[in-house]
Each structure stands twice: as structure tokens, then as C-alpha cells.
Image 1 (spheres, rainbow over the protein chains, first blue to last red):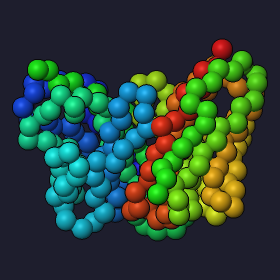
Image 2: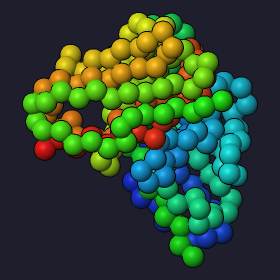
Image 3: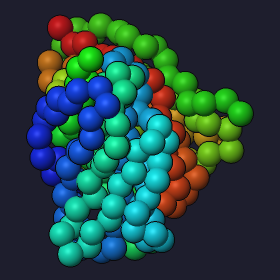
Length: 118
Length: 113
């Protein structure tokens, strides 16, 4: 079974400050890991994904995440927050083992709401 | 290339009724997954369809059922609606495979009263 824990349901930063959203996962097989962003009353948009290539993954809008197997973490960072980054962010894990009924199924964390202050 | 579209965007149903939600997948995508997102929660996997067959199911009762059509569009049906079924229902389309990106629709907000 897979699971995701996002530490901190709410994170507040000032515009221009570092953004750090924490995600820890549990998986019995090598995982694929994803970060999605959700704006109010909208669906989910993929920010970035880790699929066992480079451990440092760069995504859209200046976000990046580092896969750390020893820490079972996949934290999302952005050097300088912008007002438009205010949204809810979800970390998700998928089974990479291939085949079976769980293949391609995303297991999401509870989400972190990011607030950006002027 | 068209994105994932869901209909309707909002609806209100009475407890005990049945509802059908629809999803048009992105062009070329053969896999559709449905998720339920309760208020303040992350999305929960309901089930996935691949080439018109159910290909995995989450922890949801049988009154949640689905269909996928030859054009890969999909329906989610919920019978005997309960108040706890109130949620945002998200459809995601992708190519088969765990590493491929899932493209999400804007969701259908279902309210059960």
C-alpha cells in the first residue's frame, strides 16, 4: 500500500520569500512522485514529476522538488514566492512496478494551502 | 488538442437519488480515472478504466459504477446517494502507464441534500 503525508495543512510566506512544502511518502515499490496545484474551483494541474531519472526535478512556474530515498521525502520548493502561487498543493504517489490494478493510480496527500502575503 | 472536460459543473441531488457524471478525455488518451475530493481533503481514487474495462478500484462501495466508451469518454454513476457523497468529482485522462501525466478536468461539484 502507498501513502503520502504532507506536513502542514497551511503554509504562509511573504512575497519573494522561499516556499517549502513538505511531502513524505510510503511505498513498498519504487514510486513515481508528483506535485499538483489546485486553484479554487478548478481541477489539478501537474507541477512536476519524479519517475526515477534525476533526483532533482524542475517543474513549471519555477518550482522544483528533490527525491530523497533515504528520507522518503519529495519536498517542493520555489526560491521566491509570487502572489500568483497562492493555491492548494497536493503531493501524490503512483505505483511504478507495472501491471496490476494499482498501476497508474494516484494516492494523494491531504494538501497544503499556500498563502502569499504582499 | 482538447483538454479534459466534465459535465455538469455543478448539480444538486436529493438523498436516495441517482446521478451520472460525464467526462470527455483528452484526445488520444485511452485511460480515464475518477477521483472524489471531499471538502478540505485530497482526492481519493474511485476507479480507473482502460480500453472500456475497469482497471483498478479504490475503497468505494458498488453503488459507485462507471463506463468507458469506444471514444474513451467515461461516465461515473452513483446510486442511492448519501449526504457524504457531496464532493468534487474529478476525472483524469492519461495514456496507460504509471509515469504518464494525468490531465484533470475542472471537476463536477455534487451536493446531496
